[in-house]
Length: 243
Length: 156
Image 1: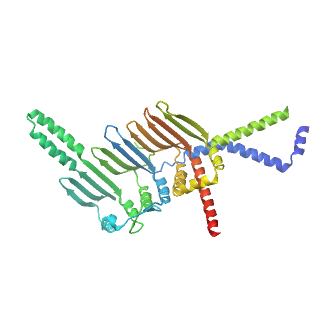
Image 2: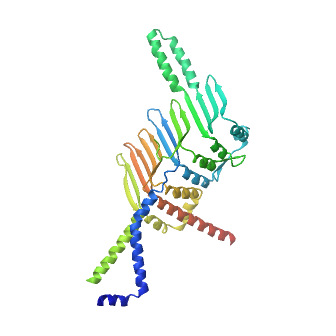
Image 3: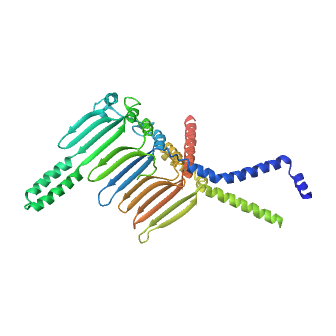
C-alpha cells in the first residue's frame, strides 16, 4: 500500500491516465495488426472482372503466354498513360486510319438495326460473317488460303501416287492437313462496349469507357484465333488465374 | 540490479520495436544464379525499410537525374503500384518458351519477378509494393523540388 502511494505521488494523474491509454492503444494495435493484414488480403473482391489473354504456340518449343489483367486496375492505370496517341484513356484516330469510312455512322446503323446477319461472304479463300445477335456484334472469319495452297500441292503429289492404298492414306493426311492449315478468327463484342468505345467524340476511342462497359458483363469469350501455328484466346471472367 | 534490469528491458524493447518496424515493411530479395563455370551466385536479403532511408543519403544531383529520367513513367508507376496493393497474390504475366520461363506476379504484397532458363540461369526478385511506392514518392518529391529551384533560377 505504501509503495502504491509513493508511485501515485511520483506520477501526476493526467500523465498516468495518458500512459494507461497509450498502453491500451498499443496493445489493441498489436492485437488488430494481423486482422488488418487479413482484411487487406481479403479485400480483393470476388466481383472483380479479369481480362485474360492466352497464346499457345503449337511449335516444338510450346511457347505459351498468359496475361491476366484486372479490369478495375486497367481502368485506373490507362488514364495515367500519356504517350503518342493515347491521352487520358482515349486514343486519337484520324480519318486516314479508317480509310475514309465513317465508322460512327456505320456503328450507329448497326446499333439501331435488329438482330441479323449483315455480311456473309463465302469465297474460295475466305469465309466472312458479320452479325448482330443478342446485343453482341459477332465477326467470324475463316481463312482458307493456307488450305488452298496446300490442296494444290497435295493434288500435284496425288498424280504421282500409284496404288489405291496409298491414295487413301494421302486423302486422310490431306483432310487432316487442310483442317490444320485453316485459320479461324471469332470475335464477339458486346454492343454496349462498342457504344462506349465511340462515345468520346468523332476522332477518339474511349478505352476507359469501353473497359468500364466490359466490366458489367459476365463471363464472355471475346476473341478466339486458331490456326496451324497459334491458338489465341481473349476472355473475360471473375477468376484471377487463367485456366 | 533493478536499474540494470530496467536498462535491459528498455534495450530489448527498443530492439524488438526496431526489428518489428524494419521487417514489417518486408524484405527485398534478390537471387541470381548462373549455372556455368565461374558464374555468379548472388543472394541478397535487404529490409525494405532501409531503402527510403538510404535514398536520403543519395547525392541530390543523382536523385534529380533519376527523377528526370523517370518523370514520364512516374504517374503510371504510381497508379499501377497503388492498384497492385489490391491484388496481393496474383499472377499477371507468364511466358514459357522451351526452357525459358518468365513470371510477373504479386506474392504476399510484394512484386515477384522470376526469370528462369533451365540449366543456364535463374533470377528471382521480390520487392514489397510499398517500398516501390516510397521510392517513387521520393523521386517525385525530388523532381518537384528541382522544378521549383529551376523556376527560381529562371525568375532570377
